[in-house]
Length: 306
Length: 306
Ligand SMILES: [Mn+2]
Ligand SMILES: [Mn+2]
Image (cartoon, rainbow over the protein chains, first blue to last red):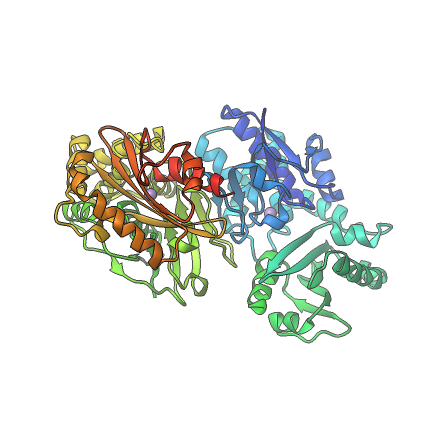
């Protein structure tokens, strides 16, 4: 029976590419391991898999009785629902430390860098295993995605150096151009139902006992969302009720203007206004410089809920 | 203001030596960091500090407003009481993943090896920093202590290789002999009050909401405790009541015979009997092969509480 590697619910490119990269590394080290996923893939992730010739990882929701590595999260609410009945062999992540616990010792590589794949590159180097060309390409794309082409405040020197090293292994001359192609795919929102857009990169957080859902849509020009904003905002309201959430926030991020508009529905909007020191108008507000949910949205919200 | 490194309450040699080793590494990397401790030191740890010329780390119980690294634990109950008001920069540990969480990304090096100092040696190698002779000696002693001279089931190949490398750096020819000297110091229990012996290596665990305290006394010959067992057992009863604990267990470990006698006081001894598939006689039982609290006592107890 192989071990599994799985990222968070509503998988993003980092969760999928790090599952692929880590499962290859562990298998090479003599521990048969396969990548898995907890949900459907975004057009961005499909673009990466197609470009480097990978199949979708297995869709697997239940892990009872299995052994697995967790990547790109350490929060219970983001992981498999039956994780208590599984053995967690390790966690590779770059977020704040969440509430997953284990009953046996394990392997954790957690670093304050821009992307899980940057850490997995360290693991390959530590173990002295060569990264295959196609895996290097997928890892590189995940880092470009998570760091928004190095523009995100989460991006570190380690991430940039890692992309350069991976581009060389993958034989890619202009990674910036390939990254921009990926963000164009990500920006293609026309004709997509509001719910699909909201859930494309959506995570739930437990903030002092309250459930807060935060989605993010990254586009190369916010104007392309003008017609859709009302529909998106209406859908947040439904999503809040369906999940008994305290708040749902959608970040509409303009990666060229380098800022985000927040669409909010909340039982108490003052908690959100306090977190960012802003005033909402019709439950919306543009904030300059906000590109990162992890670094610029979750921590102030968490403080505001205290 | 420097950063701190601190191990668990009732510090053992691993907590103290890893605080010393990590603070030197971080300081060398340009991040002024000092070692601290949450309690008094055991004769074993004093033996190590004296042998390699170290002062006791600063006794510091409160970390509100400070930034710190946590070593040798990841359980809230074992760490500083006001950890919620501190910034956790990282966790270096070799136990099961506990319930500490953070609100910002951090650096975690957690590995299923026998000692935190084995992981800190990996960090020195990763960063390319040379380990000073005296620090290498202290790290080596901590590994010999945690792995019970390599006899514990927690001991891995990585721990053995690490001790050999550190012995070479420290210029120590016979590390087995020095390790045996350390365990002789640890075994000198005569004239020590029961409470001091019980608390010498004592940790509290949260097991499904119940507080369970587990102490361990390692000696080179269990016979030397014969006269003291009744006194120790009586003290466990007081300790249980003082802390509102569900159970208190003391492991009397004979490192030469390679097994432990368990002294138990509990609201429900059947949970403990079930965990180890044994029958207690006068709330005591000898179990062959049990040397490790972490690997052989905590996991079956945790399962039994489920
Ligand atoms: Mn990520
Ligand atoms: Mn230890």
